[in-house]
Length: 326
Image 1 (cartoon, helix red, strand yellow):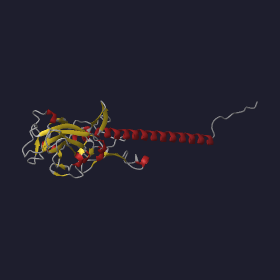
Image 2 (image 1 turned 60 degrees about the vertical axis):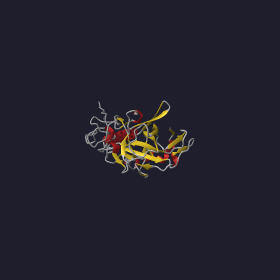
Image 3 (image 1 turned 90 degrees about the vertical axis):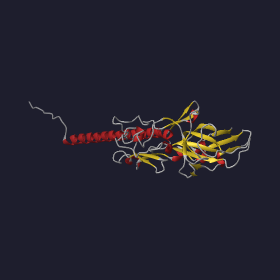
Image 4 (image 1 turned 30 degrees about the horizontal axis):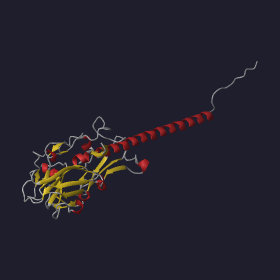
């Protein structure tokens, strides 16, 4: 009897082919996973840019009215640091209420530059006029979502966001560079930067729309002052206040009015420059009797009218503010 043997197995060529296919599948899978991981990190980093934007300035509608919230409306300026510590309130080198530091959010009685008196900054008398007071100051942290257990706000690759505030304090840039600048460069060819530009949250005083009406029964002339809070690390409380002001330049006859569009604005007794801007948020406007000769405004006799009003983001969005000579 003749026995027949059958050999089972793979030839060398078949084994090489199988290994080649497995290598392709493995490489494809790893590439897919790596790209998917990079995409997830990129999405996280972009979402965190949105969180920074909202922390700086967020607009919403409440009872059919536009309401602003965020760092710039509370403080009248962009964050002071070259990082995000002021938004996360997580670093001990950026502190509050200790010497020459920024002050916390509270009810504050404004200071004004006495434009028709002794030419110095004085505090308003709010004893009988609590409507002069404003809620201002730091009330962070403004960034809470996305902050890690160490209190740090980092991009999807665990890197710090790069922050730059302009010398004039009116613009704020925030950038992420990803993994050693390789990402997002490999996606977009450059780092990704967003900015809060000065015209997105401040306006020139000339953009205000304020009308002074004289229905008092007599001709009169007045001064107008817009009192603005700007938080800063200063020793004296009055140095956190800026007064934008003008006088009517002429007597306003009874029954007539004067609009701020025809005014020559000044700031703290000085000529206005392009760097002098009014931040979005709530401020106090005072209509001051133009006949006073000096001394402090007492909050009663020398103020014809006053109003807390909101400056909106965008020069074209300002509502008309009406004040009455009494």
